[in-house]
Length: 228
Image (cartoon, rainbow, N blue to C red; front, top):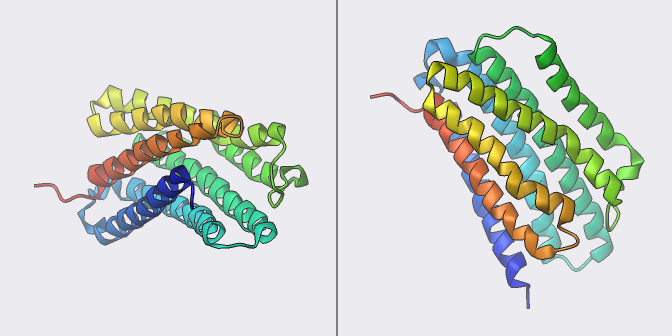
């Protein structure tokens, strides 16, 4: 009999995958509703969530194969590839959303912007190192930490920048987006850093993902929904 926690996590992951797929489709379908002054921002946001969708397809798809398969050794390879897809998707999500922030608030490609993009590139390079052991049964803890640091820095910095600039212009929906990005880390980080020590922490991923869903919907509502 399957572990109830695993069943719950898998069911939620499939629901989430359908949700983000619908969001990206709606963004594409409703691009005509976007304010002409914000087209460039909207395109970057759609591309950011498309990158996340591709990463999540790899991750959730790998978990589904693992769930229904009996080939344990092969499952480690599949799960590792799925995790790599997810991590690459996260890095591109934050790089593209950082560019959306820059365009939306009319910032130049200054040192801060270049540093945040550079951190993303460093993150991609880190993924190449064999010490990640993507296809092994478990990843060395130090490399699990190292490879998650870039998107942690990207996300926290981006959340602060969005919140600051949105607050300054009174854009309540963008303020909420900044908050959603920031608080999602309170649920993701304990799982990433301590999940192997306390498997029940995995349930926090569901809450973190719900916060991501709020971020996605608010982005859709802010830029793509038709205004009355």
